[in-house]
Length: 226
Ligand code: DC
Image 1: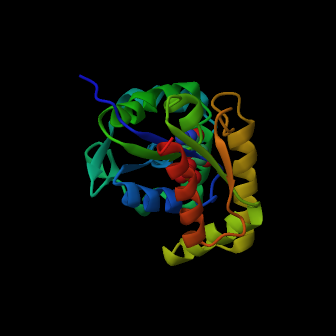
Image 2: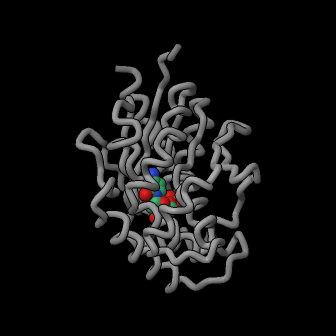
């Protein structure tokens, strides 16, 4: 039997600070945090490890039945398992970012990951971060926010994140990659990264992490208390 669950959809382009914000909000409200990008990245990882090019549509579709992907709940968040193996930071490289963006354009891949995302929201109060959560995955989410920030602000944050993880790259490379992904993610035909008509636009370009979280909580509390 389905119980009534609370769903917060947090969409927006890469590097907009969605994941940091979502993690903080999940902790505050006691909700499960789901990073849906990790699912697309994991498909990208599988495809790249098979030596399939990221634009080889038939090649990608043909290996989908072999992919055993699961999202398990650990410490209040979803963790991705591929063929029983726990997936970590190996999906955060620039190469896998490109693969993820390309595989996510395919309707077959999106359909493949749909139920994994929805089933978690059926059983848990969730805060889900992605591109199409408010439009496709959880159109009935009680709160929908679309997080935006300038590409420079986003590239700066993503660069700092990657440096911290020991990934070798430059700011220029990250900025160029981000602009390419923005166009690729928002220009695609299926489930483009666009705000739902009922989403609240939230620009955090000039805000610190703390202020971003505080402002988002004000918005969410305003909706929850109605
Ligand atoms: O959020 P992220 O940068 O980790 O996402 C990686 C890629 O996956 C991104 O380029 C677009 C795609 N994606 C998507 O199409 N839909 C989602 N809900 C989440 C991510």
